[in-house]
Amino acid sequence: MLALCCLGALVMGVGSVCATWLYAEGRIDEKQQDLQSALNEFHWAPEEVLPDLESVGKSHLDLLDAIINHRQQGLNKAGSPLNNAIDNRIDLGKDTIGSMGVIQGGNLKHLFLTSETALLEFVIEFESDTEYNIYTFADDDLNTAGSANEEISVYCTKCYKTDGVWAAKYSEYGTALTMWYDADKGKKSLSINVKTWVESTKPLELEE
Image 1 (cartoon, rainbow, N blue to C red):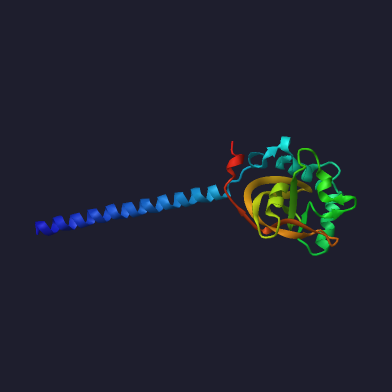
Image 2: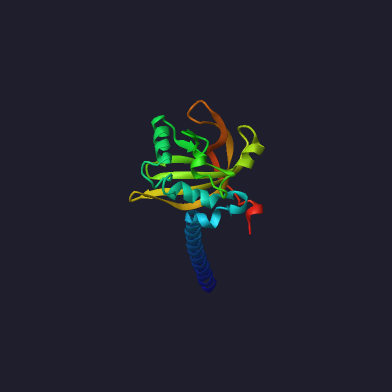
């Protein structure tokens, strides 16, 4: 009888330990999931991600700022050449516009051409009336690719329009495949296929 009582106590004790361990394990899993969700939602501001290589004409940060805030040409100027070109592209059923797009007097790249941005290109993707993705990438990467379906480095910046004002929220480094871009007037230029963009590890040559 005593032996049976001892065995029953042992079983109950082990059961309690197991229950406590399973409960604790569940709590740990929940916390890990919460932490992972927070990490997935965390993003870096553009100035923390985009290269600012002004001396070699590759300041992605300067180009982004000009596209959004240029007093005469940018997104935040009503009726600007860029906004007019975007309206025309949307009317054509397009969901992107690129720096190689033809406008009067040249192409869209010339709207934002400076010594700091001379060797960069861009594509703007229209997610909605209040959400754009701005992709920036280097001319020399396009030249090295030379044809469609080649992978190159591309930065993507999420931009949102709030109370009538466009602002960049965060940027990410990634890669995309090249493609031939329809520049509106029968001209084809090498660009990127934004639908192939994927986030990737920051290139080693740009790490500090």
